[in-house]
Length: 89
View 1 (cartoon, rainbow, N blue to C red):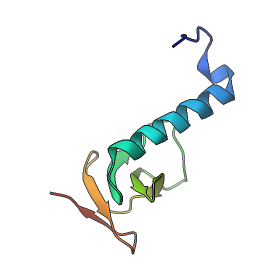
View 2 (view 1 turned 90 degrees about the vertical axis):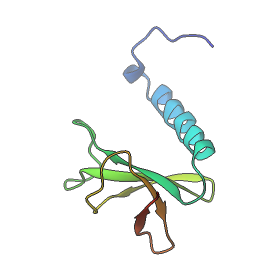
View 3 (view 1 turned 135 degrees about the vertical axis):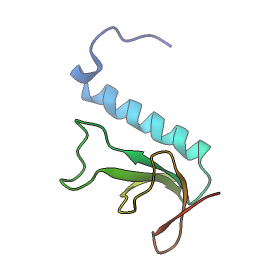
């Protein structure tokens, strides 16, 4: 694979491609309805009051939902039909 020497933020298509590849990798790793809690870092804004999200797989697509529960980052969760996460043990 050829390495791109330019700054990746200079080309929006590179960022889109990387995002799509990463989403596909997650869909291969996660089982259906399985997800993980992620704390948002500085500079990542998906809403004014969003501090953490759940990244999960549903029907071979990766989804990102706001996490209202007080779950520790890295917690594995299973999403139900009501979209309420439950911790996996």
